[in-house]
Image 1 (cartoon, rainbow, N blue to C red):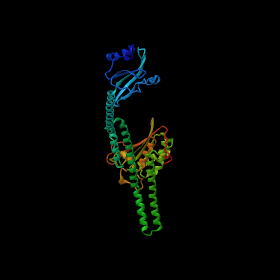
Image 2: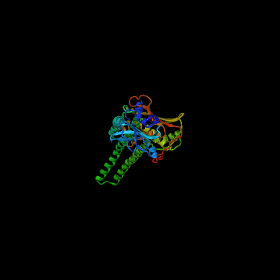
Image 3: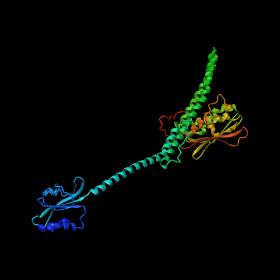
Image 4: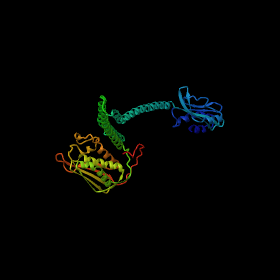
Amino acid sequence: EHLRQALQKIHRADDWAGLPEQMDETPHTAHDLSLIVVSPAGQTLFVRGSATFPASLLITDPERQAASRKPQVWSDDGWRKLRSIVTRLETGEPTTPTVLAGAAIDIAHHQQFMRSFHVALWSVVGLAALLSGFLGWLVARRGLAPLEEMRRKAADITANRLNQRLSTASIPVELAEVARTLDEMLARLQDSFRRLSDFSSDLAHELRTPVSNLLMQTQVMLAHPRSNAAYRDVLASNLEEYDRLSRTIGDMLFLAKAEHGLIVPQDEAVDLACEVSDLCEFYEPLAEEKALALQQTGEATVRGDRLMLRRALSNLLSNAIGHAPAQSTIGIGIEQQTTQARVEFVNRCRQAPAEPLERLFDRFYRADPARRDPGDGAGLGLAITRSIARAHGGEVSAEWLASPKGEIGDIRFILQLPLQALSVASSNPHANGNLR
């Protein structure tokens, strides 16, 4: 713009000599600025600076010159970079009304700055990327340390070490819920494994005696020839053992299904007083042998599986008759409350076990193993009663009415059953509601 104003002041050929002085006086002229003015004939009229403009920039053709008015970058002597603008300007001299004017500025120091900036920038970016990756690895490693600890503890858990639990004290809040869920899973696995182990041990223990008896009797009978009567006696004895095995296996199967929720009781009205009365009539001969008196009071009606509840009541009554001393009384009280029905069996007990009464409902538990009768059951009656009560949403318990003195005490078994209709809906295709 300053060069355009200076060219408009040229009116004669002699005015061209004062153009350098005018351009040197401008305060806006940079020290590294190069200027050139060329006539349309290609004659250089004015030059300032050390830049050597290439001929390709000084185009006299108006159309080509108009297309090249954008700033262009080129090299001077192959090493210095310059940016230039070439345009057509008007003068005040009639013989040369228009000229080509070019302005170029050295951008080498700018490019050097940009190269240094790029090197510094990419160095910082690369270092930041490496540092970020390293710090990210450290953070991830530290953040995953609780998971690694959980993995190590889980790897140490075996069938014999199911009691181990994952500590939630050093675990972040985000993983605490996962650790608690895993602990609950381990608790369920431990309980299932314990029940399976107890089931296997109890079953093996109970089956060992009858199988040993059968094996011994068979070996003795085969050792020497016997009469037909002797063979019949052994077969009759074996039949008793087979019957005992069958009942034990059936009871164990019932308990196994009950513990896994595979028993679905029927929903029907059950008159508890009627069922207890029928059972008292059934057990009357056995009670008369021991001179026992059976006293029944009260009534109640619940909803449930009649055959299963009858079996539970039968087990409780049979247990009372079996342990009550001769010439005593067994009281059976039935009470219908607001939300549940209670059936109580009260009898004298010859022995007050030192262990908690809750043990009475364990499989194969006997308060006095020395008093075991070969004709008795396998010790599963009360365990089956508890399973039936829980299958109906109830419970069974035992308590001493008074502190036993010596070997005699009054014990009471309480069977509690809900009054409302059962809402048992099993989605397990293996559930068997007809199991008795």
